[in-house]
Length: 304
Ligand SMILES: NC(=O)c1ccc[n+]([C@@H]2O[C@H](COP(=O)([O-])OP(=O)(O)OC[C@H]3O[C@@H](n4cnc5c(N)ncnc54)[C@H](OP(=O)(O)O)[C@@H]3O)[C@@H](O)[C@H]2O)c1
Figure 1 (cartoon, rainbow, N blue to C red):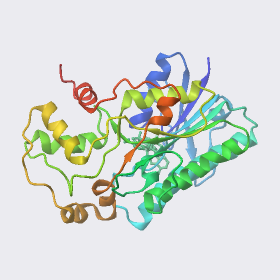
Figure 2: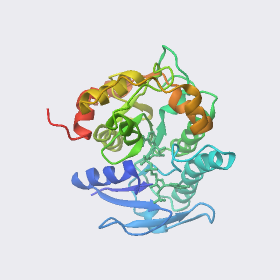
Figure 3: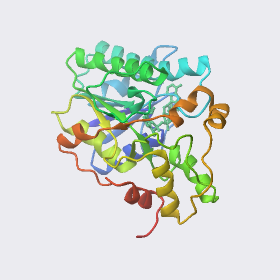
């Protein structure tokens, strides 16, 4: 039985991935700053400031999935917050890397989260693919550094996969919960121009892509983890309203309100291009939820 160590395994994606991996017979452990034990799953402590990590976590791992990172959408992007967003991803990967080398652990793969923010907060008609360069804005630069820290593993011969993730749809919070609230109140509307794309993925598909990245030795490098149903902000919000049987007629929320509320982070909400899932599909992945309507109905537990 292989052991998968998950940094940030206590988070939204990590909790779901732990359950799926255990269901498939993997032994799972978590790397966490807090080090408390979550049910049956062993939780090991790490601290990048002190350069400390519980040795057993690294020595026992066959695979490492790196999900840890300060939440990108939780707080305003002050200078300190931006530094934390980068450091929490990059320094954690660097600490794991140092220890894997020091203990000479024969890891079978290092799988790192990344984000579609790699391609930048820009609205264009272009559909971005994995061969495109990172954009130069804050999220683009964050993803570049995050992926570069993952590439260190590839450089020492450990298979490395980077999962460029879109907005994850789950029933347990995340971005969807924030989008649903106004629609439920009957005041759903498009944000800004409404023309910005929202690349999205159902949590089950994302976890299955992580599991494929663990099991498929042909997978190397970056893969976009987004569903093939491209939707703009307006189409996305309309679909939520349709599924919830709520009206969609309120005036669009103007850019300036979003900018006032969120500062620089508003770029992430007001801009966005579509992103291609072709590479992961060509690698043999079949989406369980390729369409937004089915994904929303599943997550919102709405009977067909
Ligand atoms: N959810 C999405 O829609 C989405 C989309 C694109 C990319 N991603 C990426 O996928 C990864 C997992 O996402 P998620 O939604 O599961 O995130 P999450 O719920 O915010 O959980 C991330 C985990 O990272 C750890 N963490 C938080 N602050 C940290 C810090 N300052 N230093 C080190 N670790 C810290 C926490 O674990 P402990 O408290 O146990 O240490 C937390 O449970 C993240 O890197 C995220 O950016 C997510």
